[in-house]
Length: 255
Image (cartoon, rainbow, N blue to C red):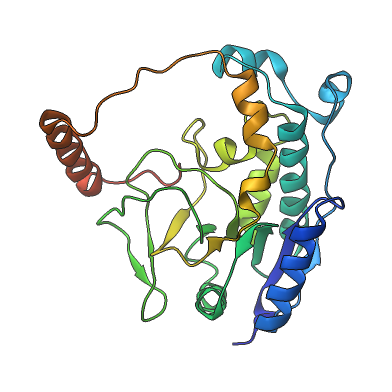
């Protein structure tokens, strides 16, 4: 099955010249065509209500509002979900700092062969504790696994089938979370058949550290979380037992 069995949409702001060049060179080398998503610039607070951002819920749940860049990032992903929902093929969605190789393409082709067995497949993520349940072999080196952990982060590279994209689009008409928290942060229940590709089938390029989103988050963050010493033996035993329990517990359908 060729790459025309799935679409590729990339998210990069017009001003992110280095990311555009990276995407162009990488996808040309892989021989995979892609299209650019209509991106949203940072959204000033006077326009938040118009675009569907609920500031009051952000303050109540996160303890802060989203930065203008975070609101714009969410809208850019929402535009990608709309395009993916309107397609009759699965869609790979990339941020401008995603790093793919030939294995990534092989995984996408394998996913496109079984589009009804998943709705969201994350090729890159911050963390995945693989559940022992519902594993599916994709390629010789990669499997689809359920997340046993309750949350993960980063939307650098993920694949949606049309049904999954439609579900995210319907849930995102009004929003109060950053895009990655909304999709995979464990904040809301979603009727979405979600998997991780294990091991990761994508990475991050050298431009990943240039994001302005994290700076905006830190500036607005007010709640302080107590840091635990993960090097202590008692803490290490606690984490081991917790992970063991999570892996064998029947997983949620999605994060």
